[in-house]
Length: 271
Length: 355
Image (cartoon, rainbow over all chains, first blue to last red; front, side):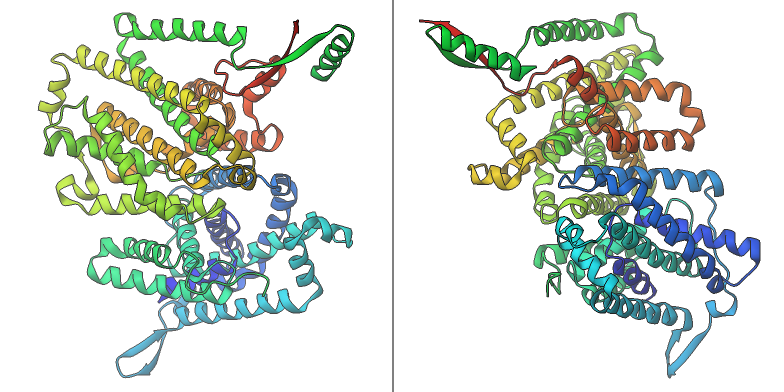
């Protein structure tokens, strides 16, 4: 079920662009450096990772991505793709292609006995709970706060939002910064749960993307369901043959795309 | 400048009793010159096997196939607005089709290149049906998923070597030509012919009514469909043509490599490199990928040993170009000098005719 937990976290970020997979890996590496320098537990390293990702996201959006906004889809796509390649190779150059891992201590293997023959690992459970908490927080933030209102207004109509005194460049940058905070959390969990190296970003991206599409665009809870479906499909695939694990996830995604092109729980952003 | 001259014409017209006529032209004197120069370059290249060394010929073949791949991706993204990061699906597919056709069906190695193209085009139809349900970023990542499915799928087929791949049997290699020099020359000519056919094909396509439809879709989907352009069919056409070209090139690439593995054949780098080439050269022009390919290989020769730094430099260059000069190197040149070697767009010229 672990795959589901991660897919959900990735999906909650609403998957803004192609660099996301590599940003997750970046976050994991930042956590690794933070742990090496300070010697803290990976969960504590979030204190360093999250502000870093926040600033990184803000600057990235403000300095680079804001210039690509507009009706044309080509510039943002190609720019993010370029950044993704730069990030991958930069990490490769700095940390080599070796697999890394964040050590969290005994939490990694602890499990709770629910009943006879059924045990749930503590770590997947933590990831799952954090994922649901984050979804709830984001929804509250979007629907209840002043900042959330500004986000929605800007995403609906940047020009009018500007007339109302909202600095849309600032808002986009803030949104990206917050998305990267989520990326940071995902990255640290990824680092604790599995091995990572600079080249795995794209495959993370694909899982997140599939979870979002299966769940239906714009529906956060749908993404949760999408992540679970994907995780289950991968585990069933792995039972058949280890080589089928990822393939099964992809196939589940393609089937959903054929049967329900709008995802299982379609929801537009307006309601 | 243009406005000014038109004003002048109008003034003249009001004085002299003559009727203004619009003439639609596409070629310019320069483009005729360009065509002639291109023909000379092609003819010179065609004699390559007689005076080029083995290493130079290999390099040129590589340049040819990257140029052809770049043209195909440019057709998709630059003209069709379909930004795919999964074209490696068809490179790998073409490569595997070469192996399947030659080994299991006994087709000649040379004939299997166009056949691989046709098979790739047929397979692209159901793929298009899937990925066309997605838009923008989602389309891009969706094509990537398809490429991954191909990769993982081919890795499962034991008769094709599974995950560790397979080599082309010597008997098939010998069947191309008896001597090594003969094989090199054959591959070289095939590559040259393929590039010319694909570029020529794109050029003719863009000058046809489909080209006009494509341009209008690129500029505004809503407006073009309101004018009676079938957006879906036109995009499908572009996707299938690109799949045809890319699969044929994939077969050619693996005819030069002689050994195929799923992870190399479906490597995202096929597409990454091509995107950088097109963006740096100038997206949405036929000349752009040519310039981009030349720049790419000029930079690669001295910089390749820096490995990942080189890729970072390429990525950074592409990002800067996309931000500061989205029309690419060729776009800058074309705008400054009004150059078009492959005139695709129609230009309106006023002529004054005395009655």
